[in-house]
Image (cartoon, rainbow, N blue to C red):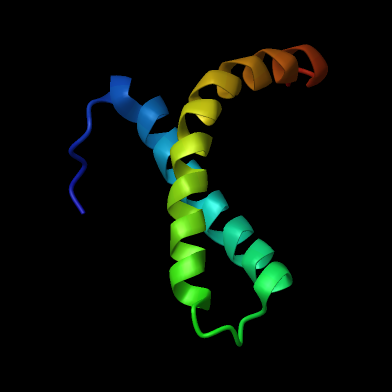
Amino acid sequence: MKPFLPKKAEHVAFGLILAGMMTFFVSGISNVIAIGISDPAFLSKWMRSWATTWAFAFPIILFVAPLVRKILHRIVKPE
């Protein structure tokens, strides 16, 4: 795939993709634990919970990521 996003959009794209992937797996695991994979509505419930959590996780990641970077710069030794 040919790159198409400008460099200044990288942090937003990172947050969008990270939030999507993490919420996909975490919501899937949570749904398996809560309702079981044999529930006939499992897939629709999972997709609904994934979309909801993604909508919350994306702005949270954009807000929290700079704070995490600052913390890491304080606790990680430079090379």
